[in-house]
Image (cartoon, rainbow, N blue to C red; front, top):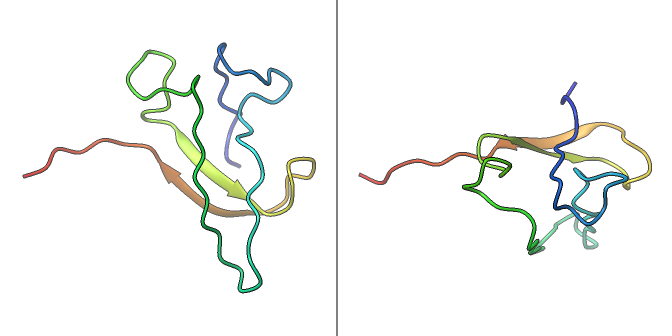
Length: 78
């Protein structure tokens, strides 16, 4: 299980606030996408730092297999 969806009170879509939208692949299965969300921050108390991100197979209406995941973190350069 990947846990509960991230809930940010500033998210415009309160029906499913953890859903950042669908990604679409090309004919070779590659995805190259950039998204910007004014309400999604890193450093604030309700920010995304320290939270996980999961990419699910299928569209936003059918949660099937998790095909990729990560934790949003910060490191210091040496």
